[in-house]
Image (cartoon, rainbow, N blue to C red; front, side, top):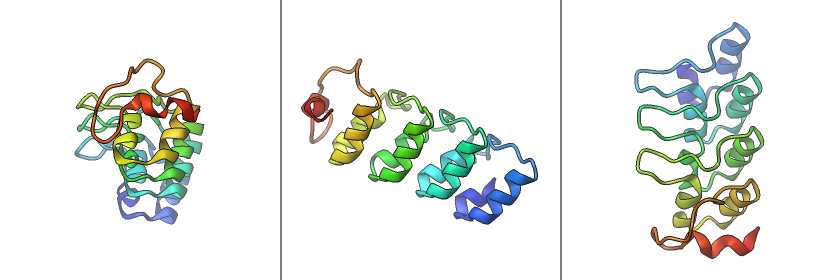
Length: 140
């Protein structure tokens, strides 16, 4: 659904109502849900989640919808994905999780949401940028 890349909620909604495959991939392997997360389109993301889109889909880059907003601090996007049951410990193609990206980006609220959702339970403290993941363990 190309409309998700253009942030066009009404068009995406129309496609869904007409029976479009919500997990259809573009030429880069990205789904509408991945694009909605990337563009920070909470309304489109919520619509896609509610209609059964795969929250753990990966594009050709290997990154999930949760990784894309992690370094941007898109809190509303993260909340929608976490509430939808996204794998909070999924690793991207470089081996990093959303928790690592959020910690490196200095987004404490994002880190709190991920910790409360159970992220990072199997990750030990390690240096990856400005923070160690273990520095946030008291936030839970």
